[in-house]
Amino acid sequence: MIPSPLPSHFRIDEIDFNNHNLMGIFSLFDLLPKVYFYIKDTQGRFLWMNESLRNLLGIQDREGYLGKTDLDYFSPDLVFLYLREDHEVISTRQAILNQPWIVPGRSLATKWFISSKIPLFDAQNRVCGTAGVMRSLSHEYEATYPAVEIKKAVDYIFEHYTERIDIEHLASLVFLSRRQLERHFQQIFHLSPKDFICKIRIDAAIRLLIDSDLSITQVALETGFYDNSYLTRQFKRMVGLSPLQFRKKYASFQQKIPNESTPFRLESSES
Image (cartoon, rainbow, N blue to C red; front, side):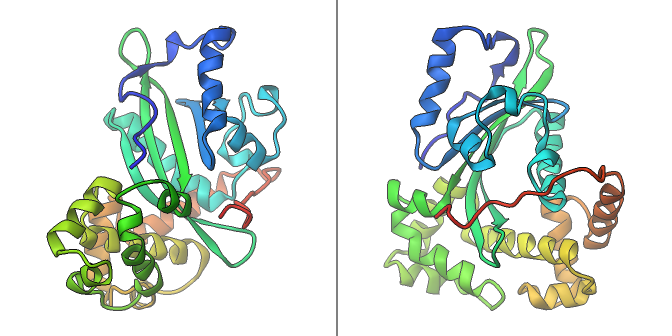
């Protein structure tokens, strides 16, 4: 597992963006393949992006993104989810590490990433920003152990999350005991295999709640939950809202988006 590259308590007031030595250290993030690093203030305005993220967004230099927000680059549905996670990190003062994310491309294909995000603090120990990294899950398979060890099990979950998935069967796919499989999932995702499956289903349900007019019951059936009440219980546990509350919050968020915003989705070139 690639660790989060910043300590869990990192003071943003100590960052001197004119310090060549410090910027030299930050430039090391430019050497990490398929790793996207950023720093934002509490208003969600970008203060720093590494070269991989700038290239992804088509930005030449720091002046091109300084003061802009996710809404300048990403589609409203993604921005809504990013802002919810930012708010959680800022309000709880706690990092969110190694979380799987579905990111849709311009094509029908979706990409899977591992995301880590931490709070940043000022001299008075107040949260004054966030820093985060996202990395391609496919690259994670290529680069790290135990990710390589459980690749087939994770791929199986992505392909069959709408169906019943037996944990013992997952373990057998990668020739591990159930306990070994659970330990590997905890190391990589900070989730048990059962909760990882639930997270993938919740993410799929979120996409349908945002992108479709399906009823909550239909969303449950389409995402492997099989009934409305089970989806609602798990959704509240992981998201903090019921599916209906979430849909209403997104609708309210959409109404506040300025018309001139330019949606952006990650391209399929990221493999």
